[in-house]
Amino acid sequence: MPLPTLVLLHGFPLDHTIWEPQLKGLSDVADVLAPDLRGFGTDDRPVPEIMTMEDYAADVKALLNENGLERVVLGGLSMGGYVALAFAEAWPERLAGLLLVNTRGTADGEEAQRGRKDTAQRALAGGVPVIARGMVPTLLSEATRGRHPELAAEVEALIAWQRPEAVAAAARGMALRPDRHAVLGSLDVPVLVITGEHDHLMPLSTSLALQAAAAGSHLAVVPGAGHLSNLEGPEAFNAAVRTFLAGI
Ligand code: MLT
Image (cartoon, rainbow, N blue to C red):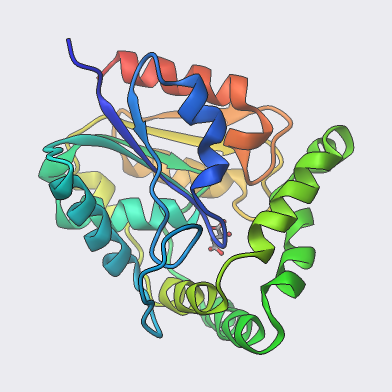
């Protein structure tokens, strides 16, 4: 039997390299594809002022079409999860499964929307390295930073080299996303929700809400991990995905 294709979408303001433990560790059970969202990492396409989650989802659909992929298991971490939900709303027939990692289905409130504007302005005016420094403690758990200081340095460097206009466009686009819990209610494919035990950006309640919205879905919590659960606890993360893929 051919292996399923697993497409993994990175979070903000990161790139496809966060999925290295999955590209290596899941290659025997899936063809793993990890694209860079527009403007991030090695993607050098022009970036408009705002990239909505629907815009990124349309890019993902174009990628599937280019590669002749009719149906895939689509996964996304945090902002990647927002994009996966936008894709699921628009093209549910292209999904064989949905993997929602350290993410949420809710829209931004007014304060969060103001914060996005501020992030966009800071990225454009002050540069991404300044944002990178402040972000690492919110992305990795205290335990991860203590045990793997090299990972903290790598994540900071990864953020720092992202293009300011890509960071600004994504921040503005996230502010516009609607609540998408209802999408999960009408979806007829297996859903796995994964989060980190110590993710303070997306507390457990957000994952429980996703799980409740998707009938029959499962929730896996990666022990000791923060917001980047796939990087912080790759063994537990990959084990959960393996079980999920085996049931598809
Ligand atoms: C992410 O990791 O993609 C971001 O934390 C998402 C967000 O800011 O809402």
